[in-house]
Length: 431
Image 1 (cartoon, rainbow, N blue to C red):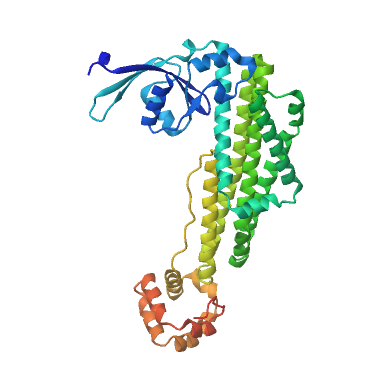
Image 2 (image 1 turned 60 degrees about the horizontal axis):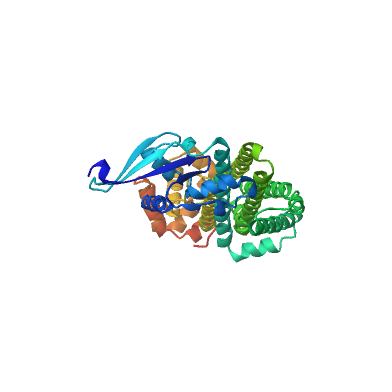
């Protein structure tokens, strides 16, 4: 098929810090993006909630409507493959057999918009990105257990109560803006305290998470750690919810604030937009740092727990399972806020027979660390150990030469209940 025989249409691509705007014939653009496996959203003046102050931009955007796509690794690769924002470059869409089905032409956005209109479109794109982020956080909060929701509703803490009040105020203002197309001075004045309220709640919740992390790291024993982790099972998701609610409320306030700037000070719109984007990135940066520190604490607590597997096998396994669940929660939380973090899991402890086998092997081989750990009582209790172990002890001795794995198997023939009476420390189980 020749170039002249294939379907041709032009797409203008505009990119900012958070998304990609594909402008062109709406159905063609949507069909193409669907074929690429990308989720896109309608981009029109009505969808973006444009104010009267940029009516001309709104009119032009409606004429050249298209689709907005969140900036991800996949969407960025698409532009890299077929064209580059700000540069005229043709691209070809082919079937697997090489047949050309579409001829794409990426136009220079400056040819489509005047500088003033480009500024308005940039503001609309920021609105779209924030609205999408708000929806993702809303979906995350909807998935949280009812128990966490109950904790938030019953929260007597002043900081959390004020955050809930600010959230209601912003929701009400956003509803008025959507219904009327603008926000009165009176309504805007009521929102003035909401920004510091969300900032305070965000810092407060991150501080609570830091406190839980410090308790886990400072736990003196696996029993102490188990109690801290058990409490964290309810507390951590609740504080994640507070952080998410604070970010969501501030994002909604930013959308209203940007709308206000559209109508009142269009000449400084770009500076205002850049300030909002920069402030949001700063907030998410603080959250990212807090979550990263929390994950490091989980890993340190897990290391401490695994070191006590020999003497507390059941408690260690239970604690590691709980720590892994908390690590999983950090992943769901960061994804909901659009914070990209590597996936991590908590490593489980080796099986008890392997741990015990390695320990006995080190003691039998005269390892300095092992000998000092049990002290001189090993020698004093040797006779008791041999009498209690019986045939199992003989098998245990011969297994030393065969390695730690064989020692673990040999331990299965030993009555640990009787052996425990001859040891200088208490085992955490009966048999």
